[in-house]
Length: 382
Image (cartoon, rainbow, N blue to C red; front, side, top):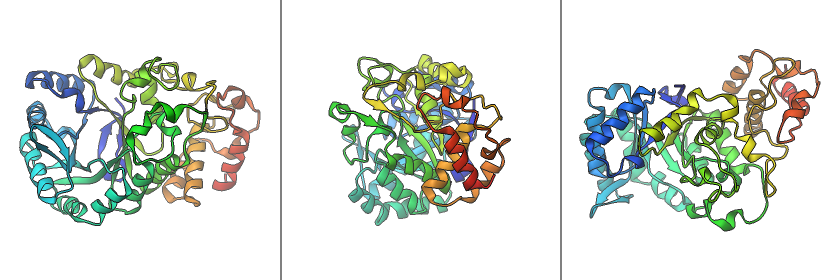
């Protein structure tokens, strides 16, 4: 298993992590079996958005005795009423549900306290101008949560949260189809047929700005909807008309800036294995470009997707990393200190490019790599 640091939190998490929806309606023994299996595969991170009391209790029982070795991301603003989950912005209900979550999980703290599902700007204002953010900050000060997070499907709203300086982690929906679409408060549009009816080109700039801002600001991203609700795994249901594998979907998300982990909603041990297979997958198995390149209505022409097809470089340059670091400086219109240091740690620099052009013949997206190395050398000074 690969472990990454979740932004500025210092928390080390497994790159492949667990969403909780797959454990709904399972018995305590079945939940324990899945957690035993996940832990054996090196997974140490789970997202618990649901307020279902039985689920919370079953996860608490499964982690008893090993809580300190596991990272829990629990959601604020979810409550259980009339035998169903509800999102709330009511301060009293939020606090009561949080206390109930701690009790059922058999712990006195949550690693990431995730403010749940903020997609609309009006909702963002209610949360960050009102009592909810004050509750989150107080819980962090008391040590009952270690980091504050916010989940969203809207890159514009997620960026606003990052810009407050109060949020340490963003839970965001990332996959190659969603990345094509502009911000929208209506989450249903992310998979609506009409959204993909016309030709779409390159990653939406708002999404790219969000990823780059998170990287520069030290805000970690953990990913939801990596399979697009399973549709990306089916040629019939995918907007691409081609199926991706779990490993390809996971690799796409994990190559975006600031992404530390992918939350996969696994229903059983076989699905845990399918996700964890990313860890040992060969480069050709991880290769998402084989699905994305050459599509008639969807193109990432001229845009580095960090897929690594350009390698190996004749001069030994890690081209994908250079492009990623350069793009971070473009997004910020400066060279942030952390980006400068990451670039400085590379074994070879953009200025060492000999302009042989071999990399460009391999690139499935037609990137002007020689030009990008020249621009990076000018920006970083070597």
